[in-house]
Amino acid sequence: MKKLIALALALALVFSLAACGSSSTTTTTTEDTAAATEAPAATEAPAEETEEPAEETPEPYELIVFAAASMTETLTEIKDMYEAENPWVTITYNFDSSGTLKTQIEEGADCDIFISAAQKQMNQLDITADASVNTDGLDYVLQGTRINLVENKCALAVPEGNPAGITSYDDLFEKLAAGEVFLAIGNSDVPVGQYTESIFAYYGVDMDSVASCLTYGSNVKEVTTAVSENTADCGIIYGTDAFSAGLEVVEYATAEMAGGQVVYPAAVLNITSNEEGAQAFLDYLTTDECVAVFEAVGFAMAD
Image (cartoon, rainbow, N blue to C red; front, top):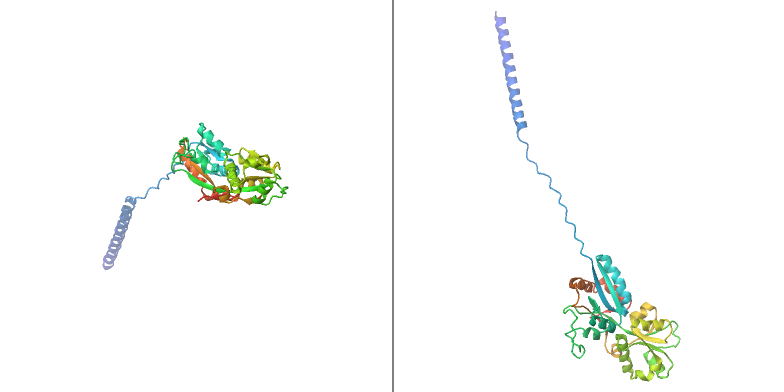
């Protein structure tokens, strides 16, 4: 009997422990289930990728630049540089003597920028210039845009081999007086011709007295060609033209001889239909890239 009671008690204890274990397991499962059913933590939505708006290509436009013939080589190179950086711009040049260009502007030619080989032709278009120069009261320069761009020099150039053996301006005028040389010069209405007149005046020589020894060109390129082709014994041209043509320079005229510095003024004209574009190109001409082009052929940047 005692054994039966003891067995019963043992069985009761076993069942009690089993119930406790079941309860504990259930509790744990319930807690885990509750945790599992909680709403997941909010996560940040991936940022939407935004495309940067493409830059709009400017509308194509053309700039017309009237420039002294002596700038042909340099400005042609600069045109290629500028159009490569600004493919919507087309630069169109008109190269000739500054006097011819001034007349064309006055007669109504389309022009955005004017670059003269002397102050005189620019002054003749600038209403703020002295009335003794701007005798017709012309008003074409856009005020605030005029600058002195570059400086040049008047060179006494000779053909290859220097057949006449000219050594200097002093030597030239001695040979002219003796009728021994043939000199190519610019017409009196173009800057290079006007600088030449000053050189003759400096030496006290009347040009009419040696007229048989002179041949004229309507711009500096024509004078340069006469020397290059040896149809003249020498010519008074710009140093930059002598460089571009591969001519020997025997002497450069001083500012005193030439009647002043050979300065090239440049300005946007008030007849332009694209003031902003014209000013941008004029500004570009003073950048380091363009300075290098000008100086490579003998121009100096003006003060």
